[in-house]
Length: 303
Length: 211
Image 1 (cartoon, each protein chain N blue to C red):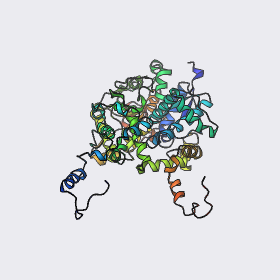
Image 2: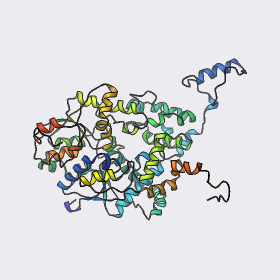
Image 3: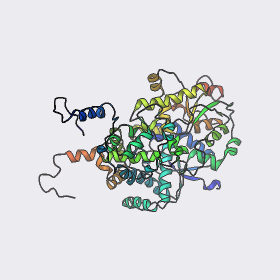
Image 4: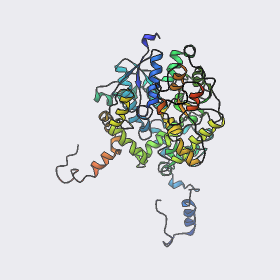
C-alpha cells in the first residue's frame, strides 16, 4: 500500500477518549509521523463488548453499525482499545462468513438507513504499525536511545485471540509481534512468568476481589522480572494495572510502583517527541526515573 | 424443589429427608435425576455460540488454562460444561460463576474439541438473562449505553478536557442504540423499560390498546 492510501477510520471506542487521552494523543502523533491519516467519525457508538454477555445479537448489531459507518466512508477501521478490537474483528469475521447473520443485522440497521456489505477490514493500530509501516522503517526513525530499558509487554488478550478471527496474524500461544514492536523502539521486551495472564478487567464489575487478584499477580510478576514499566495498548487493561494499582496495592498489601506506559508513548519518546506531546502528564504512576535516565527530561519533570 | 422442608413438617419417610439434607447442604453433592432438564443442552445449542457444547469430552484443558480458576475455585469451566450437559439448568443459570469468565480466550484456543468455550459462556449468560438472572452490573451497563451511546458519558467536563488537549469533541448518540435494543428486545431489560412497565398510567385502566 502506498503512503497516500494509508487512511483509516479511527475507532476510539468508549474508554480511550474519556479515560486514556494520553493514549489517544500519542497514537495521533505516531500516525502523523508515519503518514497515516486518521478520519474521525463522530457517529460511532460503543462496539458492543459489554453487551455480549447479556445479548450477543445486540452486540453484533452494535459492532455492525460501526462497520457500516466506516464502509460508507470507504475506509478500513483502526482501533486503539484491544477489547474493541476483539469485538469489532470477531463481529466482522462472523458477518463476512455468515450471510444469514449479515441479513438479520442489516434488517435492523436499515431503520437507520445503514447497510453493511462486509468490505471493511479492522485492525489494531499496533498491528497496522507492524504490517504497514514495518519494524525496519520504525527502527530507521529512532532518534533517542532507550538504552535497552527492560519493559514488560502486555498487549491484552484480544490483540490476537480468538486467533481464527484474527487470521492467525500472530501465534496466540507464542506471540512475537508485540515484542518486535517494543524491541524496535530500542527498549527491550523483558520476559516474565505471567506474560499471558489476563488483566481481569472484564470481571471488575462482577467480583472486584478476583479482578484485583488477577491484576496483582501480573504486576508482581512484572516487578519480579526486573521490568521498569508495563507497556500497554489497551485502555481497559490500563484501568486494571495503572488506574487501580494503588487500590490493588492496598488490597493485597504489596507495593508495585509500576509505571504503565502506552506503546505509542514509548515509541513517541524514541522518535524524539516530548513527554508533553505524548500526554505523559496524564500517566498516574509517573515514569520520572525512566524519563530522566533516557535524558528526555531533566530534574524538573514535565509530567 | 425450591423450598427446604421445615424441620417440624411431617415427613413421609426418613430416607427422603436425609437425601434432602445431603442435597441441599452447602453444595449439591447428590444430583437427582428428576431435577435434571434433559433439554437444557439443546436450549444452549439453540443460542448463538452454544452449538458446540456437546463436543466436550471433559478433558479439563479449559480449567487448567483458566486464569480466573487459578484464583477463584467456583469458576471451573469443565464443571460448568458438565453441569450444563447433565441438565442442571437452574444451578447453572442462577449461579454467580457464569458471570466470572474474563473472556481471555485461553481455553478457547486450547480446547482440543473446539467447544469455543469463551463464546459458549456468552450463550450461557444470554440464557441466564432470558431466565431472569441478569447480573445487576450488566443492567447498569445496558442503561449507560442506551442512555449515552457509549459506556462513559461524554459530558462537558470530558469535552473541556479534550478541547484543552486539542482532541476532537465527543458526541453522545443514544438514539441508534436504543433503536437497536428495541429491535432485539434488549430494551426490555433496561431500567427505563422497567419503570415504564411499573408506572401506574400504563394503560390498564382504559383504552390500553395493545401495540
